[in-house]
Image (cartoon, rainbow, N blue to C red; front, side, top):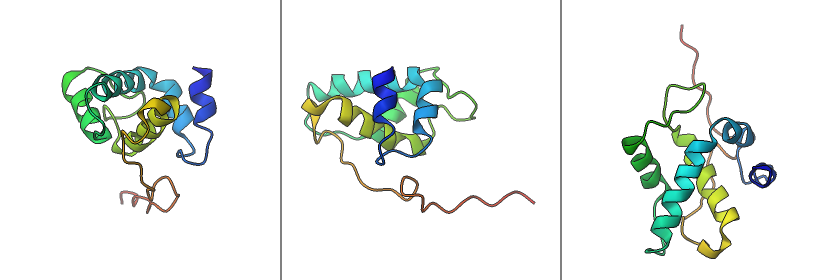
Length: 111
């Protein structure tokens, strides 16, 4: 797992993704398994669709959160897959995000 964590230190990942990955490696491994299976048959696919399939078909749950897979983690998982599997370059369309760039608007605290 050290290689995974070293890669997540790059600026293309949200700052806390390495911590999330450490606590939720089964979720990423299933994402990676699904992506590799699909990449053997298709040139491009949606990371969000893979996450939705995992949500639907599994009992995996994030540690410390109410959601199985937080939507904000999907782009980071796609970036990690792309970094670990250069043979599938272009499989996911990667874009900049407000969350990753630190531009997300914080949620208001409940009154």
